[in-house]
Each structure stands twice: as C-alpha cells, then as structure tokens.
Length: 166
Image 1 (cartoon, helix red, strand yellow):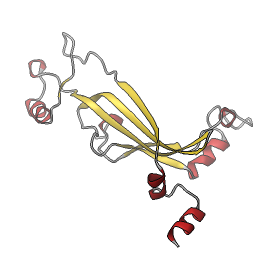
Image 2 (cartoon, helix red, strand yellow):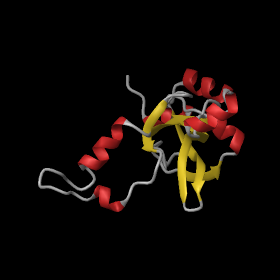
Image 3 (cartoon, one colour):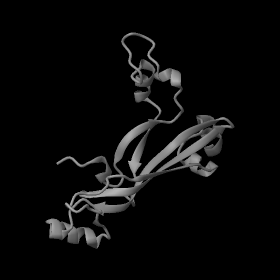
C-alpha cells in the first residue's frame, strides 16, 4: 500500500526545489501553449539545479502516524550581498500521533502497543472516535552555511578547488 507523504521513511526524497530563486516572469505564459506555472522556462529547470527535499534521517515519519509539527530546514550559500543559493533542504516530522483510534473505539491493540513503545500516542479524537484535526505547524529555518561546509558540498567554482587541492 502507498504511504502518505508524511509517513515517508527517513532519508527519502519528497520533492525537489530550485537552487536559485525563480522570478515571477518565469511563471507567466509566453505563448498560447503554456499555462500559468507550466512554462517552458520552468520545465527546463527540471533538468538541472534542483535539490532534493529529504526527510530528516533522525525524525522521519511512520505508517499510521500524523506529525503535529514539521520543520523545513533550508541551508544556503550567500553568493553575493543580494543573492542566496539553496544548498540543502531537509524536512523533519515531530510530535507524532497515531491515526489508530484508542482501544475503547476499536483501535488495534498491537499497533497501539507498538506506537506506545516509540513514544507515539493516539491523536485526539472526538466523541465518535474520529481524529479532531489533521492540522500541523510548519516551522521554516533558513540559515547560511560556512565556508568549510560549502567547500565540502562543492558549491564553489572549479578554480577554487584547483587552487585549494594543487
């Protein structure tokens, strides 16, 4: 059975985003064949300069759970004073609750016990045993990487590495 995106295992890729900012003009159709947000300019970006948004290796999802808090961590390279380039993106799931109903509403004892061993308890339910809310909080953390981290991620031009390693 297919998992929902928030049940993705640690290290898996959810989607890709561009390293560099995209202008609003790139979203606008330039011909009758294009649609808003489905332009040739954007389509050409699929072949290069995309970075994966991966599920955090330590805080991934589990089947039968919903995260109540998510953190999108965006690490960037400050290329110039006015230009940033994304280098890495990670999404972590926190404050998980299980979608299994509590036992008194017919939830699976085996699944509830397994979840409890992981510190995951049933989501809040209404008087009919239905999940009260599927909502979550999203926190976005956006910060620069230092020179050494950028060097290790090969974000500089070839001349830097030529000088550095010869």
